[in-house]
Picture 1 (cartoon, helix red, strand yellow):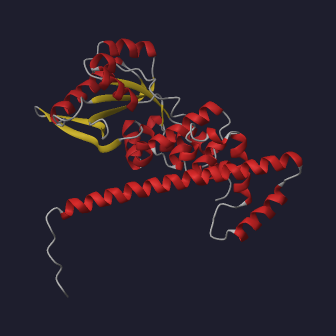
Picture 2: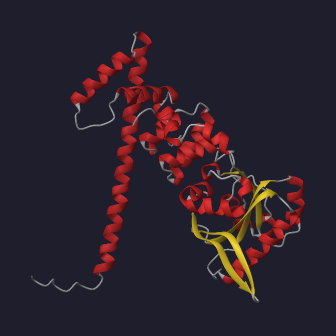
Picture 3: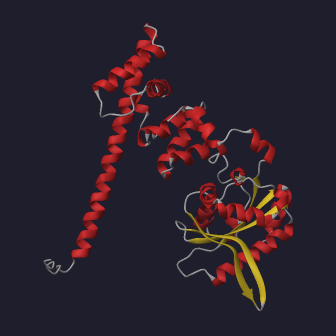
Length: 338
């Protein structure tokens, strides 16, 4: 085997630049192709809407049309009768083709658009479309966030961030938290205690991170600290990779009590001292409780010496969970068979 010739100086840097250029261009091409596809589907839907005003275009006609289109374009997918109905709904939902761009519809994959078409509130539909495009949500994340009202819950939990952090830091920290967190996917009962809840969150860490929001990375559960021979354990520790700050999460299955903030503030100070680096932003704490009095929380936060927030979490009782459809049943009900 012939040996390769020695590489010139700067080869690695050149390769990295070319890779970055190829990836960027490929992403642009994919986005442009997706935009064209969504606009094509809108155009088809518009034609179907117009024909439906002057003649009966029921399921039988759409089935025949789907067959003819698949025969004409055998290499293209997406021409099922079900998809044609969604195209018609797309044109009906956004009557003007020019409105697709401002609402970020043409920046989303078709599967995302189909999910959004099930939302009847126009303002909510547009808000989630823009958020999905901006944050790169997968379809499952979009379904989850619509179901749990993620945007409606954004930034409303009580905190003392504005007092404890500078203006930019307070705004960023506030964006990380939501109230209430919907943890029904954990399928645990509150009386099982904080440890059972921790274990369930760690076991379902992907769903937990998705519920917490974009940018969270899991550091550990029951993170141990030794302080002058005494053992202390942080329930859950996360790191926000975009804001470069640790986030301490403490879980309480009962009602909020003022002393809960003292413990959380202690853990925030501990993480800040032991783990925080010079490049990191100040550590913040989040207390998840089963219920709270806003007045009690407000008075407690006013005297806290650490940047902390208090949110409630929701756990569906097991009997309700058994009575509700599962994720696959909901998907089929909303989107039809794959």
